[in-house]
Image (cartoon, rainbow, N blue to C red; front, side, top):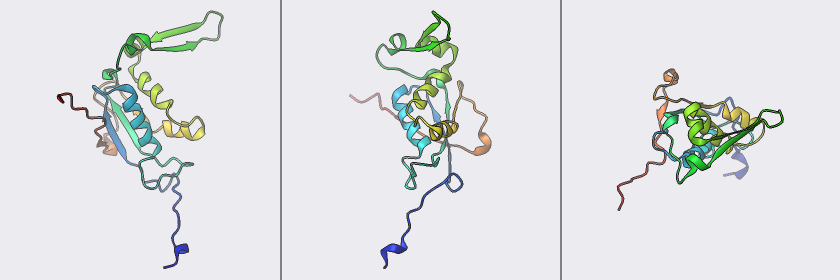
Length: 155
């Protein structure tokens, strides 16, 4: 056999064979869930991973308001933004943010784990986060994905 006859396949957006997954965030730890979802969005667990193209899958996250943080992060971790005016620095803790907009907490964590360029922005558009148990993507027939199933009954 001639070793030159084998070609490396460079996957692009058209032939990426994207799938749809549903992840239930109820009882999941924020950082662990975010890192797993970021890998799926990026496509790093696929055999045909290509670093310069969007070859990852689409992910739907439901029950975003039921996410769990370890330690005292609910009150000690905060999100800071600046309005652009003097004295316009606004700070919210995670517990306040979960009451106002729970999807933001997951989106912010996952976006921070993606590349900081145009490819990262394109990959982030494949993420859909919903607050309740319902989503509007039944037509895509998403596959339920179990992430971080922790057995709490271990002694």
